[in-house]
Every structure is written in C-alpha cells, then in structure tokens.
Image 1: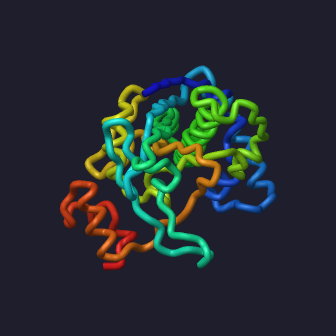
Image 2: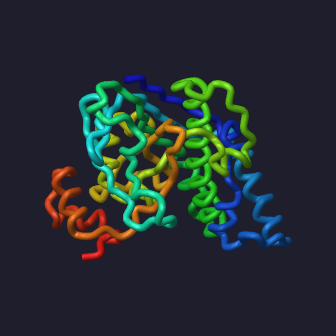
Image 3: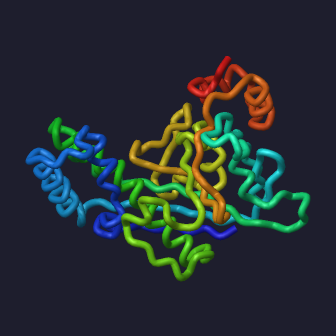
Length: 272
C-alpha cells in the first residue's frame, strides 16, 4: 500500500474549480447577467483573501486489489459494491465497480485507490455571521473540495500511480472526464451507500486531514469528498438506480449489516 497526504494552497486548486456547478448551486446555470458577473467577482475576491488563511487537504492510498463477485478486495480488506439495475442501453450489461478490477480467479493482481479531500473548516465558519457571505463561502468550499479531488486525481494518474504519465488535459477536458479511469465518490449515484465511508476511514485515516464522520457516515467538514479511484480504460460512471430485495439482501450479507440498519443508508435506492 502506498499512502500520499498533501496540503494545497487555495490558488493551487482554483484552476480546477468547475464553475458550472458553482453557478448551478446559485440557480444561475446558463444565465449571463450582471448578477452572475457580480457573484463571480465576489467569489474570486473571497478566494484571493483566503489564500494565506486556509488550505485544502487530500489523502490517497494505492492498494493491490482483486475483484470477487461484486466486491473489491484491497489487499486484506473487502469493500462490497452494488450492481447497476437500469441500463440506458439495453445492449450493455449491468455493471458494478468490481467489473473494472481483475477477478481473483485469474491469479494476477490489479490496483485500486481510495481517497478523501477536504477544506479547512474555518473557510466557511469564519464567514458564517453574514448570510450572503456564509452561502458564498459554503458553495465555494464545496467546489474547492471537488477541485482538490480533481487536482489529486490528475497527480495520481500522472505521478503517484503513474498509469498516464504523459496526460496533458485542460481544465475543461478534466471536467468532461476525458482522462483514463474514474473516481466515483461515496454518496453519488454509483456508490450511494454512505456507510462505505466507515470502511474508507478505517483504511486510509481521514482524520489525518481533519475529516470526522457522523453516525450516518456523513463527513465533517461538510465540504469533503471521499471515494474510489480506478484506472481501467473502460471504467465509466453509472447510476445504480433502485434495487430489488434480492440484491438488497445480498448486499446486507456482504456488508455485514442487518436489513434494518442497511435501510438507513440505502432507503432512496430501495424498491421495497
């Protein structure tokens, strides 16, 4: 296992911010107006003023890995995943994250990574007394955490893992996921189970970059991202969709949770 911990200046990650999602948060997607221009000006001013006060942080661990059914085994730790239920194209199979890792029965190992990123909590808290500035700081902090994940992933591909050393993509190409591999995040459509954060935390130590977990698996600070990094050329993002009882019962068994406990984490995905 290889473990990388990094701290970044706000200016390091600013070029990686996806402003499309920032404006979406403010319900200004596709709207070019004086209000949008003013919001962008305020955002850039806050970023510049924060340069000497706050940092973003990242941790990445690279493991030898194999797949076993719908699980991925990271050296000595197993993480279960859910299989896609509704396909956009009926000619394609229902996929699972484990499909992008070599099966154990092949007798050869593959690699997979786990990561987490966050922003100093003060970035939001120190601006919370003013309603507008509090909203601005929170929406920016969310983007900074995602931008830190984007920057980390780029360095992982080119250096820390090094499977794409000659990659040379623009920020727009990065936002379009033009790179090889994926970094699905916990809580997103392909990995909806927040309890996976408990496993990731045990494995990589999120506390080393200032992240703690609630009893529901949510991260504190709120502006944090955690997930998986895969390098397979055909790896792609997908939506698990709603799952039936058969897969739910199987997942409970593999996760080691009772059905009652698991329902708290997967209620939005259950058909029953």
